[in-house]
Image (cartoon, rainbow over all chains, first blue to last red; front, side, top):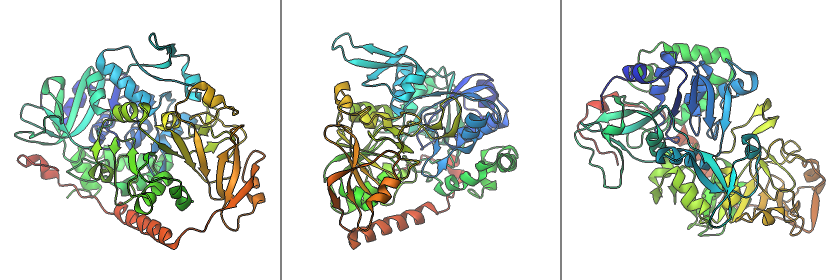
Amino acid sequence: MPLMTLSDAIAQHVRDGQSVALEGFTHLIPFAAGHEIIRQSRRRLHLIRMTPDLICDQMIGMGCAERLTFSWGGNPGVGSLHRLRDAIERDWPQPLTISERTHAEMGVAYQAGASGLPCGLMRHYADTGLDRVGGPRTLACPFSGDSLLAVAAINPDVTILHAQQADQQGNVLIRGIIGAAREAALAARCLLVTVEARVERLDAPLNAIVLPHWLISAVSIVPGGAHPSYAAGCYPRDNRFYGEWDAIARERERFQQWMQQYVLASRDHAELLRRLRVAA
Amino acid sequence: MTVTAARQLADAAVCFVGIGLPSAACNLARRTHAPQLVLIYESGTVGARPQVLPLSIGDGELADTAACVVSLPEVFAHYLQRGRVDVGFLSAAQIDRHGNLNTTVIGSYARPAVRLPGSGGAPEIAAHAREVLVIMKQSPRSFVARLDFLTSCGYLGGAGERARAGFPGRGPRAVITDFGILRPHPETDELQLCAIYPGVAVDAVRAATGWPLRVAHDLQVLPSPQPADLDTLRALHAATAQAHAVAVRINLRTADAPASHPH
């Protein structure tokens, strides 16, 4: 597990055209890593996130993505992701191919990917609209005859997570809401992790969620790396910012200005947080 | 509407909660008549007892007050699909006369007029929860003759089609709106108006519905909400607004700290 700057980690491991999963369910969203991908102008990415959230809204609006796999694309409790909508409804800044699933299907798809299976199974009773646009994928259970839905595995080229701590060897500890982060990590060909802090020992309970260092291609120390999402035990979700994002992202010009003024003009995440007056 | 929705929840039920109005109704119920209500959010927070309403489904408030926090694949497979959820609480942009829900698109899927957030956990909640409560404002745009997209299954085409398809959950038991309550007819599964708030005219409800709305022959008038319930709800919203307006400050020096022990 090499410890490196986030800028080096993205430069070395994320290439144009790759499939990149950024996971963390509302909690621990790897914003700093997403911003660095924007700064380094990656193109034609296939983004994978259950809830695209503001980070994919930004990456899509900045032209990084040509494809998105997701299951719920809104600004939680606030409304739309305007950049995502603009891409789907009006092809701006470029057409976006979507591959849409349910949360449960995404969970099963990551689990299958993490287990080395081509697909995972769920119960199925009647076709929804998504089943119709997704094509046939039901089969009969060989034991019970029950109707099952097969969900194709997701194996991202790169999965990026944010976590609270890494120890001296690079083992990573995640606390709190976990979503499908562990499955997304184990399904990936390359795993990058940003952490709030490096510590001597993790002091984790035996059943804690620890990603062993040898699974990880790079660890970068990025305090505040989940902001405006949060890191339990470190800082809360910036619900105020999530509210403000609605007006920032609604129009193309204001969005571009904001991205230029804050993300692109900042060398790194610490500088961005100072510009946003979140950090001193 | 929120108070009426809360009243639909029996104490000690296990409830899978969506964000927004459902979350407000469930937390009001937990603070009033149903203190033992078990709230499960799709973020994997099981038995959450939030002091303020979460803005997102995964706010720290939910994890901090939960009995346990499990992964998302686990909450959907082990809790929902396994049949451990009594009540699923949903909302939507569109509902049809058989309680089918659309949260995906207005217009065509390939080129939508309005792209909505999508499925999230709703299709599986609608399938597996023993029963479903729907809460949404009623208008001809939201209560439609034909959905633009079928995201989550209610009673499908009605007249027992859902039961014949083998769904483990029985489907929407009630649709709580800003006019009253609609419930499925026992034979046709078609939503009909069963209760209205005091002062609501049936014609106004008909005008807010995109299909010829049937009215139950024993239409009830709901009691006015108790002042205590309204006070509790207002206090909850006020505390929530205050909590969400707090400015976040991050200490960039945490990286230099020795072994820290976040709780």
